[in-house]
Length: 113
Image (cartoon, rainbow, N blue to C red; front, top):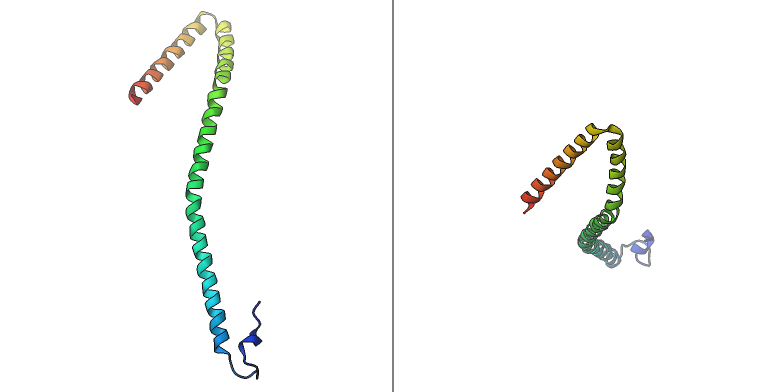
């Protein structure tokens, strides 16, 4: 902490302008240094954020890739129970769902190519 008495000369009545300039230059230099460091750290944060987002995306992709077969198997197991209980109408509905899903997938794949 800066004490106001250090800005006076030894007699206590005259200002020491050299000390005032020294403290002023030190304060401005500290502010400039803090600003430069903030800019550098802000620029360094950009690639780190990009890598973080990419790692998050890849982690979710791997998670879906590993868990998807189990989810699909559970969905088909519950759908199989529904079709068996519904009789012939259930088979017709299931076949319709399979055909519509196949058509949608074929359209998406053809547009991606």
